[in-house]
Length: 499
Image (cartoon, rainbow, N blue to C red; front, side, top):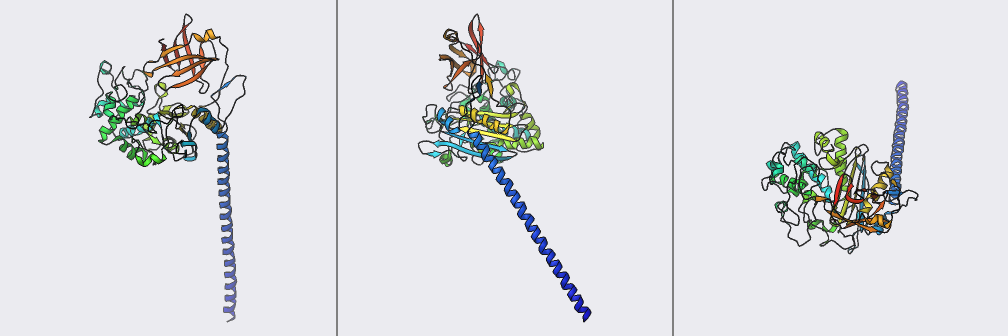
């Protein structure tokens, strides 16, 4: 009995010790969990505060691209620049390390309806449609159904690229279409208004819409020439190969896999999206006829999306390249896509050592997409206006905040030229397929008027024959013969004086 009692007592004592130990363990585990949660919450809070402060700095540090030597740099808020440029609304989104870091809307999506711009507002992406549409052609290449380097007519059943003296040896191919070396005409499209007779893809290519027929005007592969007409040929090739409507194909194979749920290539825009679509505005503040244009040239200019959803394209391409694994396209094809050709054009995006990117301009809309190659950042900026000046100001502020290359401030010196010296540059200059523009004389310098875009910008002199545009820093060099300007050269392009 005694032994039993002692055993019981010892057992009870051990149980008490065990229970006490368990309680301590549970307490310590709970304490550790609480501390971990507190640390995570603290980290999240700090990250949230850092992001909020970054946004505030970006919002209040907009500037023009050029700092005039001897002058202090002027910075502005987003609201100030929206007012200055007469831009109704702006949508901005930034991603970091595969995740959306922040997105925000500013101003109005529709002025008359008092509808604010939000991250959920859909806008036309303009020519950013091209690199997104290119993904489907590259997917078909991965599948062995559309080779990049054969005659595109092999894939066209409802229409054929007309052969001529330029196609006797070299052919129009998907690769050349994607990087704009196919020698094709029609660089851009003006869109159609609500109520217009909207042509089919074949009718667009045959010149039965509001643009000329798409033809080969020089030997394919010979040189670079931007061509929305080429991407419209690709649009038809994709539809013919798949025996499917282009917009449906892109929804199934590109937009949905990228989780771009509020994005569509459908034109006219389906009614289900009207309540969240931004209205486009002209430079003078007038609404675009019917609130937004219609683009049957969907691959070239017809993508409706949000700034935040466009980030997903950049995130996916960065993931494929960083991990060297296949995704929406294969790693091998993505590497080809990001290999720069003439004028730094890859197979869809513009590419350099630091970035892959594309800008967009539709009637009443402007946009910019930038993905960095060596830093895990992506940025998208979109406006519902023909005036896109604020876009370069915002991307410069974003790049400065996150220490990203490609948008550094430029310092230039302005010289004084007499009225007589300025007058000799006045005239009309023709750049061929890119259209014409006019040089005008204004106070303190010149002004350039681009007729096709109804765009005007001042030009300041930095030497006797070199002028620059202050908001972008683009330089225009006048080629002189016997003291008279005969050409203008800028960024590898040339325009000849015609008047």
